[in-house]
Image (cartoon, rainbow, N blue to C red; front, top):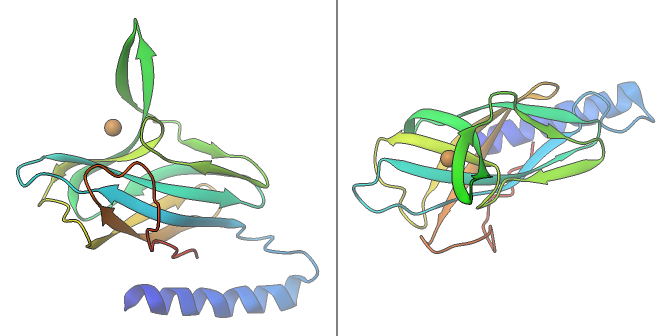
Length: 161
Ligand SMILES: [Cu+2]
């Protein structure tokens, strides 16, 4: 319910800012996050990964991630080192190009959930807060897909703000 209210509040503020700053479109907050999802985890798993697609009108940078489902949450990516794929913590954040988008996805950037407080159960939703340099905090609901899922597919994670 909280997310519906947030979305409604945003719609109102967006409408208002549109009036005040017309004809510039979304000049103060041109960042949206959609299609948030995660893979289901086995019951005893301590780590999980979540993914989301970010669009930006004005250019932005994803600088932080948080979620109540894990003790520690970090932006990670994969790099290849001597033929071995490793995950690294992306401390500098992820650049979202102006009028562009970045898809966090398996094998690339991801939201690393460490110290899971419980398994991620297929079919459920859990909140993730994405913190941006320009847009501030954006809350999304990540949909937990089958453990074999490779993309958001038909995930109903379209809670753009
Ligand atoms: Cu990771």
